[in-house]
Length: 286
Image (cartoon, rainbow, N blue to C red; front, side):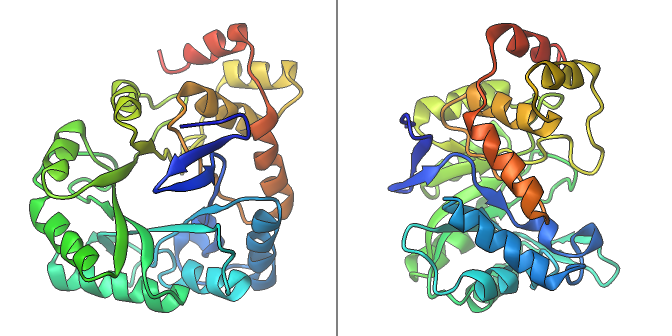
């Protein structure tokens, strides 16, 4: 649950609700090395120095790029830093996103995350479902989740989350393992998970939305621009603040490869949206 300091009790840790997503540290299309290696390290260090204690990553970003950057920039890690990673996909030589659900693929993914992050155990691993690359789609997750649960029993994974999932899949998953979080796309214009978020909040399960401004197809909204101008904030700050106010179980992971943009994003934690602004923003997804 949240407190006035803007934290949420997640896997027994007081996690700042505004964290950092490392995806943008990789090259174009989340593939290959960063354009500026030193700048990538600087962003990670600036995030932790600013108090961020939740970093979201995956070894299929790059692949292997963001985890190695995180290790180079931040190891040995601060005691309060929670690194959350995800498995269930791999990258093709053409930068395509491909499912990787077989038990041997999941074992290799966890081992690669451990190696490249320099850890002996992963705090939280999200199983990313790939029935549809572009969004949740129904299908049984029992086989891959049982493989991840076995890795948990072996001590390589402490906690399990899910990404790109439906409420039906969450119900199935909770019969196999404890699920600590859900990571799906959710923003002002993409609000299919409204009821799902409320149900998760009632169960004490964290919800970690990605793509605050629409991801690879950025949201263009006159309402968002108008609210941002009135509040003397950026559209991204307003979009982040809206999600923080949406539900107390929401943890944000905005990404950037720029220290200046990082600082702008973190400032959203102190932005309170008045009721009339929220009502106007709510029309975007209506």
